[in-house]
Length: 443
Image (cartoon, rainbow, N blue to C red; front, side, top):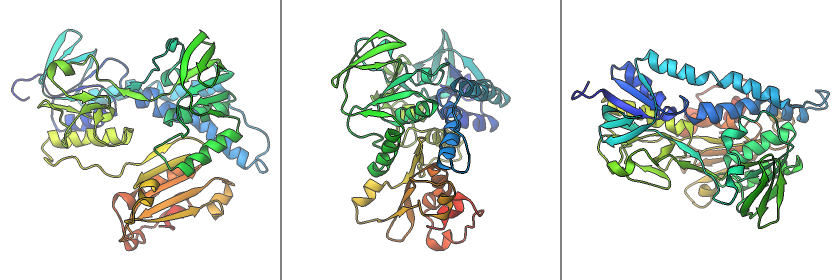
């Protein structure tokens, strides 16, 4: 214990921005507490990554069968109710498992709403707890449109708990969540309409590859309405009308997927003087806020990095090293990969295609993978990869669109993260035959 505080470190929020660092910190002998007003584990295990992938696996099986329909006879269909039950079977135990893990390391789990009192004190439902250091890991929540009838629209959490699949789903937005849920709902048999604010989906990714995904969804029956402004919802929640500048949209379920916003309200930031803006909590290169002793990690922290689970994990583990004295260096982010889990998927890491093509510092190699022997096995009709090399021919970026883009980018990630040269790449031998070995041979 330091200076007679209750804890050495107290975290507000119990997602990846917390528990991936809190447990190893406690294992080093530090007194740690975690405050959580909702489910332990935060968004990713409970209302995001884990649930999404559980629902998506049958989609991938169906997609594979369609590509191999001359070999695998019959038509597969997704039983939405059973798929949802399986999702619950997989993820419903995660909060308890994570809490059990925290307690096993001697961490106090304080169920309640945490609010800053000063830079060493947190109020949890009327009781004060003191700590040498405080970490804010309050994450993001779904944005909600500010139009009449907005309460009729649902968010991603509600979609991931739909007991019955609506006949028609209108999805407002065209980012990660919108495109992934459009893929899942369409494959499960729902009629899907995507209302786009502009004329381009998934702006974080290469336009050509995004167009491949959008056109594939269109061929499967998904409708895209560009440059749409939602003006009002009316009717009933299970049978509503969405009034837009492009005319009315009639639907059984409206998903507001217009982005995510930081949880910065009502946690004492203004009272204590912690600076924040519409992006989240402002931090320095040690993840410390504008108030000494108060730090932020995970999606709520403004670091310039993608707001992804791997980012939150890295930040949380960095704080463990910082607090335990293993480092005093500023945080140095590695190459963080990202993927959109559509069908096909898009994944990328490092220097983007758009950035590379604007600079003469890079060499860009584009590959059509559809003729590759490994892709021919599963009859992939969309499979493209772009590799970005620097002047020394180090691989510094990679982007792929294909059914296995996430696995491919993950397999070649070490070459990007460590900036391996050709001789070093040649020293790494992958299992064969695998998608990883096939991808590695082209570096």
